[in-house]
Image (cartoon, rainbow, N blue to C red; front, side):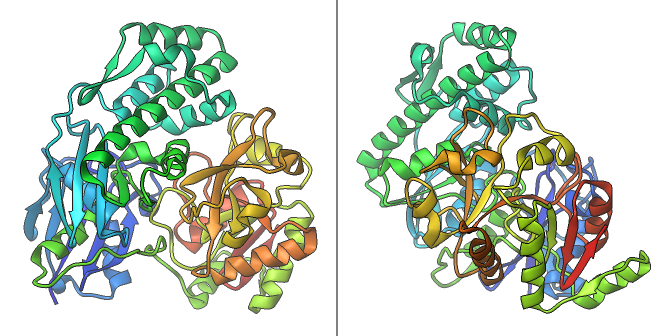
Length: 502
């Protein structure tokens, strides 16, 4: 057995992925092991901890690892094995297409890290071929980063804060921005006055910034749909796969799905640079395959996991008191805590390889508890008062509480409420839409938790946010979970089959 490791995120979010026999076996970010948020790779360095973790997950030996695959320029890995290189945008395209299960697709990459703004690919028969486009000037991701910088935030890192402001701005009208951002042939034209418009908003305070962010985001969405309609007319492909950091944006993802331009729109578990490690590993597998290589859906849970025995060893070493419960009792204890308004740290199964907690390294809360939003923003996450939190709901229950019937298994889309007043405890004033994770049959235990919470409250919906301390990555190990539990305002910790209270 000969395996290569996909390596990505040399500047930020270093990650390693292993694939063999056409399957993605393991993906893990270095920062989740080193506990340094956004960590990249030092010159001449290597994400050794992430590599070792993926080797252990895949249950292979070092001798089976024959090479490394990267998709970033200007980076040299230490000499240890054969090195293969792909174009960076091709790596993004591979992550989007080869994890989609959609074999006849248009693939759009919007990313700014390599000087190439936007690329389009056709995915067919398990292969990717770039479509000649001749894009000129800034791309959609660059304009969004320009907005981020203009609002005195950090491009490449704080775009999610701009999205939160845009949600507060709550506009479907691009207004004045329509004349500042215009589509031209193979590009976007940005009027020089655009920067003055953003600077004016910055000087006007939070509400003015929110209105500007909402208007610019709305206009970018309009231009993106116009661009894709033109492409669809030319190529008439049924499905769209997207990659690149732009598609962390849930507003744009939702717009693409709701537009109806394509029958299917796929956003990968991690469309950013850390996710490129997975694309590289799969791309190498596809390139050397002598048979048809089919894209296939992959699990969002491909990181480290820990047995009850391993968890117990940590708890005993920390001299902690705990209860060991069967699944039924564990669900009952958790729902009792949630209905009393408590915050529950949840640590079970394999670590997520995307940026969002999807139920294995999560903090759960009741969306109806008094002061739940204040407790989350002020005392747990130290966030601005206007920040919202994702909600988890069973797929079949979506139409009961939200407009539309989209599937959003990776919390990649946002939804508006049928009755916002019902969820007023968890909604900042003036906001009526949030990110939502739809839970299907692939997560039976989380479905059971939602069902039991619904029996107790009448509404099977939970707040789901990432299990991490202030300004650090999602917890990876039982020891991380214990440390964050005792260092934050969490009331209860579920780790494996163990329950701990303060």
